[in-house]
Length: 386
Ligand code: PLP
Image 1: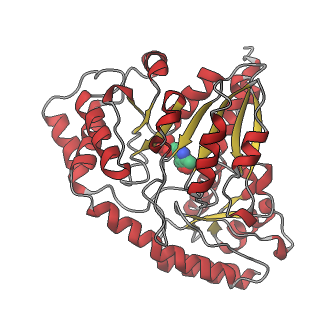
Image 2: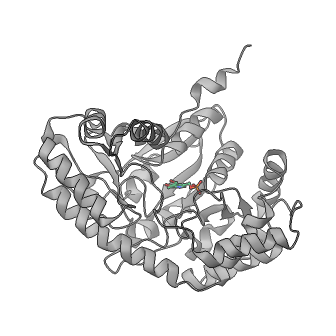
Image 3: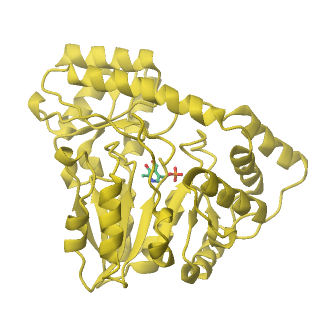
């Protein structure tokens, strides 16, 4: 067999590698607390699961339109109107199996050798992986602790060249929990008016998870960029539905047919019962979301305080998502050493900052999608170790 060269450029998501190791250790009888994986520890709310069961019973077993059930796309548009006060045409909504396919398709649509794509670093590792896979040159947007891990519009704009095709931004962010202030987004959008050849992908998968009175700013709220904006969101994090595989994006008019063809080539459609579950999530009561977010907020405060109490560790306020991203340089350990040591010697799974790009050295990602009790126990174990 001779594989294509492109395969050697494809990266991965280390959180899955850590998860596999943590599960293997647990199977050997070790008591592991998993603060590594980025998924809510809650069960999918009952009324959502029931809608999928009903859809199966009602015989929704066939293909749906490749871009998603019309009724689901209408519900997405209504939800975006409710949450962000924006008008979205359901024809611009394309439903896919999770958040990831949108980023894969967007990067494959714009990236090829000779082009450049900008992405946050540290950031969700799949961005860099698929940019490299497409043959485009990845251009990191360095995110720094001193700026609350928010991008600076000036930095982004100064890195644009005639080869730039796509800029990826993500707020609230994985792995840092950073939230970009509105002023920087205003400046970015204004600056992009001078670069009409550049498309923008805004990954807003954590748009429901902001704390301390912060409000989400959606890129959909900027009409001047709509004709080249891809806004990604989904059900995985908001409704504790990571394993269902359901997400969507709002695409610009000129891209809808292209992405629909990619869906037809790739997966035909998302399985119908899952789409009915997604519909129930958006049209049903939203207190399940409010409750989960309130619990994340309480845990966030617990973990940030406990991290700041560890010798050699400093943790900035985590503004959004469900991650804390402390600086661990004072421990004398590299990110990877700390990740391995904490897992092997304290039974606490975390993810090295470097798994999210070179700019993550000196940091460790803790997901606080776990019980307060487990978080406190994990912190105690690490404290003893340090
Ligand atoms: N975008 C970001 C920033 C994420 O952190 C994740 C998952 O961790 C995703 C997208 C992908 O979500 P999904 O599991 O729906 O593919």
